[in-house]
Amino acid sequence: MSAEMIDGKAVAAALRAELAEKVSAIKASGKRAPGLAVVLVGEDPASRVYVASKAKQTVEVGMLSIEHKLPVETSEADLLALVEKLNADATIDGILVQLPLPKHIDADKVLNAIVPEKDVDGFHPMNAGALATGGVGFIPCTPRGSMRLIKGVKKDLSGLNAVVVGRSNIVGKPMALLLLNENCTVTIAHSRTRNLAEVCRAADILVAAVGRPKLLGAEHVKPGAIVIDVGINRITDEATGKNKLVGDVDFEAAKAVAGYITPVPGGVGPMTIACLMENTLDSYLRATGC
Ligand code: GUN
Image 1: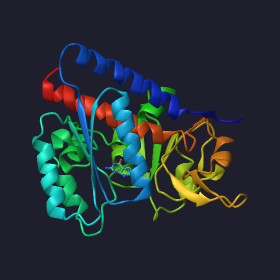
Image 2 (image 1 turned 30 degrees about the vertical axis):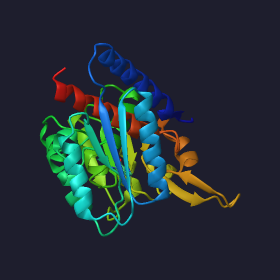
Image 3 (image 1 turned 60 degrees about the vertical axis):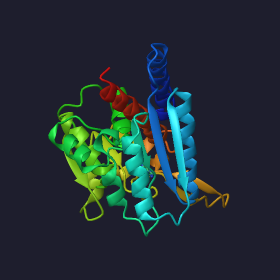
């Protein structure tokens, strides 16, 4: 048996098309467009690619895109001042400060300075708390996108065993909470977990978010499981000597056992930006009372 591939690229494109239609109707009624501000500090090549991609897709769905590209030596005070300005800007519904930030800037201080109502990354403690307690907030984009892919395969997750490998604030913890909200029995595994393969093999839904290339193989996958690979790892291909992207899951090995699996690239990755657009539209609708 070979797993069915979950086409994140196609699901993301469909979501963006849906959002574009909604934005188009908003603008047709004479209202302002939703606006997203993205702030990049420094020259990190991967961050530049992500930020360019975010800006392009924001424009494509019909939203206002504002980019602030600041030099690497920007002070924490100047960055905080920019965040304050964007907090007060009525044309901006979402603020995203691209991570990682340079070492001289306290990232938590900056992320906590974004008003929770515009924190479309869902990183602010108010939004993390809302997810944990069932309130209204923003769900971080990668877990939101991953959950959309899971629900595309199976609508009712009640009672299923879910294992999340990784405990980051950005992916692992919010992913576990989303699965719990769907009535899954949730385990969070991490670098200190004993018998990782055995723990993972109990999972009807296995989410890998550790940032370790091909950590999970066939022995970690329950036959028929839904496998969601959040990892984006750059490695050198031994055969060609070229750089390539691989996930936290050994795709070929896991595919032979799983029921459904996301590829890397083309799985969770495209969903993250599409869900950023979705969060921005949600923010706009809350701000304008539509
Ligand atoms: N850097 C890598 N992924 C992300 C993300 O989802 N949000 C932000 N702000 N920075 C990132």
